[in-house]
Image 1 (cartoon, rainbow, N blue to C red):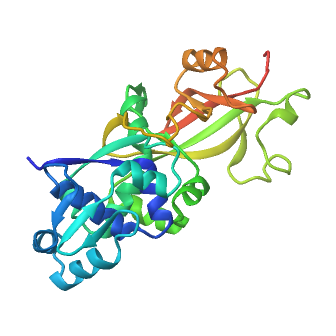
Image 2 (image 1 turned 90 degrees about the horizontal axis):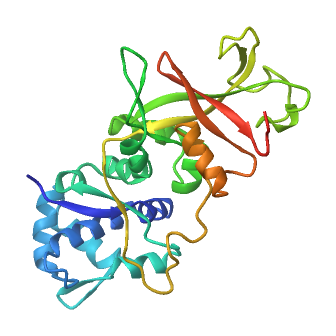
Length: 299
């Protein structure tokens, strides 16, 4: 079985956004080759091995190693010196190393497009393995899941366009599920609904439907897609050194919860979003419907 190497989600996104997809992959591969963890590799050995694994010319590999190390590594004489991943995180402004996933050697040496796709969608690895899923025949929620995230947020984090996101999703077979939020409309809660300017039906993906079968239509709106990826989630890195901030510092509040119990716990711990939150209520035709609860709503 192929060996695996740990890679950091936050480092992936930051590097891809800066256009460092090629040196990022080389950095992980060099760490893969550094069995002893001493941070030093013979340049000639790295050129021979990487040119074979990546199916690239030795001249091209040597050029990348000598000229594109940046914050990741540097070449002095006939050796490559790897910077510690904590130092790399510090150099590019990360507050912590955060979550990690593991990639096989084959996934690291695959086409660059697929590597970048896995690097970006590693953001969905944790939720893909811990939450819920939809049974294809019964439509019931199972103990598996995925991450709900807007395409605009993915663009902000990684710098890739919507069309590139779709291309990457096809390349590594990312599973996409539509999600919708809903809420009963009353005179008191209209201003609390998470809608943009405009009336009903003026916003894309917005409609009326009786979700809970009580004879009264709810306002339903389209939420960000849910993405599920087949990547091996390891956990949060325990490695940290000053001036890296602890991963627990400035922890962002969540917006989506699998069930009312987890949402209630988050409310008691003051971890919900200020505007409100969603909880999964119904699954139908491979679509997820989530009830929206505005902040400080007593209904």
